[in-house]
Length: 413
Ligand SMILES: *Cc1c(COP(=O)(O)O)cnc(C)c1O
Image 1: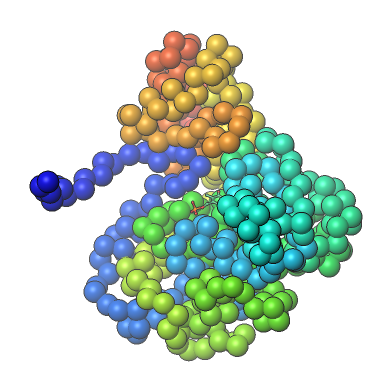
Image 2: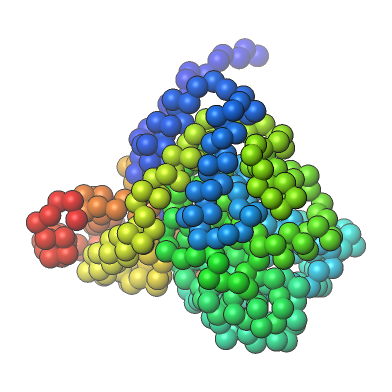
């Protein structure tokens, strides 16, 4: 057998128009590529991490000292948030789509006893975990949370803020209030809302732990950092029980970000080997978020999502989502059942949209970091072409008139 070295991996430029990742911002990529060669204890790398910590607190609206970020993807931050859940802990988890479903699996893994793990190692059924399954396409409401927490009196309650699988916004206020009323510590998957929604952690005192990701609202995919934030009550619980993890224990992790024994210190200490390139990219994405301002970003997302929603509706699709960064839709009745074919045709052309990852099969089109007329028009046209390609009808004159009426003559709208 002979082996030849592969040619250099070339990856084409595509349009990431799914639920995430969004197109990483050019400023972020530049910061990533132009960072000098430096190790993880070099002074500017450590200073950058401290600055990131302060910027995160500002963006997320919190005085939680334990606000920092975990190397990796959204699941890395979520695993860190779930690390304080111990075998036998009583948990109520609400699911309404793919991602909260995986979160609930993680919670069952954390709360399962050794016997429960042995009985079903990859999908343990933890008797102490109650999963409330809300059907795909419907939101988790405050009433649902109130009822379940009153009945089960758990130590932990879990919900996704925005369920990206079905494109639904869940009731954060109702969740936080119910947690506070019933003495449960709320845990929230905020992977798809950070950097897109205008909300403040400290307005939701029932929620003890938050976890997000780099690749969605922060436009920072070059594998960087998943933001997390914990109240003192969470840290106290963790201090009391411990966690079965070194790398994802928030108390250990926070040290590299200059948080020791609940206090900010001047300089981080070694937890693991962080990348100066990733720190530089993450730092730039946080600066970008602060410069845009969350209020303005949130407004832009709502404006452009409404245009995309109306355009696909004019093509005969039915939108079932209410997330400002994502449209989840059913194709026109004549094309029902051909969702995968349509998505694959789009991908073949570098137009990266997604199907749903769990039943029912729907199409998901996202607008992360695509916040101008030109970008939305491009997405609308590519999608219209794909519908036509399958034999569907699209009247581009009507679509053009719709875009024009929404955006007027201002190209920059
Ligand atoms: C994208 C997403 C995740 C997973 O994030 P990764 O970066 O793929 O690890 C988890 N939860 C929600 C709600 C998401 O949208």
